[in-house]
Image 1 (tube, one colour):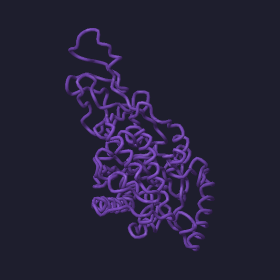
Image 2 (cartoon, rainbow, N blue to C red):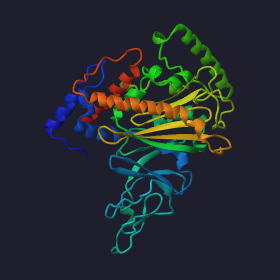
Image 3 (cartoon, rainbow, N blue to C red):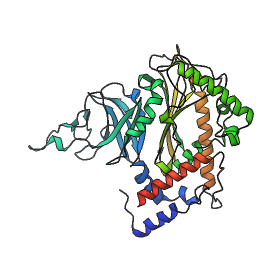
Image 4 (cartoon, rainbow, N blue to C red):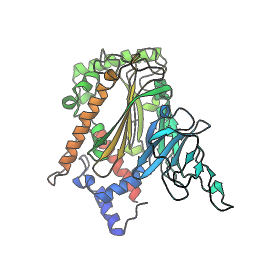
Length: 418
């Protein structure tokens, strides 16, 4: 828990209040160490965090680790098939228990003094201890965990916010993708020299896309409203959308389920999650370099024309999923000016590399887009480090989702500091 004296608290409150509406954040938001620690306590240790995919731990005893600012969490499937989130800290002397980033275990055995725990984190054995020690009082500390259609979320909060509305929003839109029945095609990790907020700011606008993501704009209609869309593009989008709605209806799906209509984020209504489908341009059925299907259809799909599934949750997750593969992005702050980013590509669980798909056809589209974005964010971090930096006005046509993110962030910080 972050401890602040009166002067520090007042300083942070003044900083949070210093943003001019309709503008970016002032320089200090990317350079104040105390603010960063307050963000960790207020946002990252209180919210729900995407940890990984269910298919990473398909069997009892399978686990992977996820760490947030010194808190290592074991995400493990227990003997009942449930996902548990256990702090990777022995209840005896505090040693880390799991040292490998992933694996499979029958029991968790501390390497220091061999205290032994089951897959739910209950203490089983404690060699060499005095009689009368109550095992039930010394199980591994637990975080909260929820699964949503193949996506695992954890919360480090003692009493996290209600997750049911998130489940109800995401589950019906994501279900046809079949992520619980998928397999990992590739995992890649990146260290991006940028504050975590800059990564989200970049994600929340496509003002930069035409110049920076030529392969992305060939596949997508990223024009947010009629005011900034040429009439011929708007007409194309209308035609493509109508065609996609017909194709989805034939498969028992809809372009925009009622649960996926909420703006993201919506700080006025406490919405930090969203799920929806969007159409691809004519001739594209997958977010690949040429728009062609490059792997077997995933999940419940019977036709490749399903558009793209998009799921987003603050503060650390988004996914783009095509008919034949999905790509998840997980953010984790790694100090004030670095963000650890994991990208996870999934394909159908029965697909075999080299026979049914080739990574050189699946990876390039989003790997190229991501690396372009990481370069942008690194460049921006260098820019906001200058003492000459002052935030400029945001575009009301192309950066309104960015403005929503900033308002959500400031709202969360204000509530936490209160």
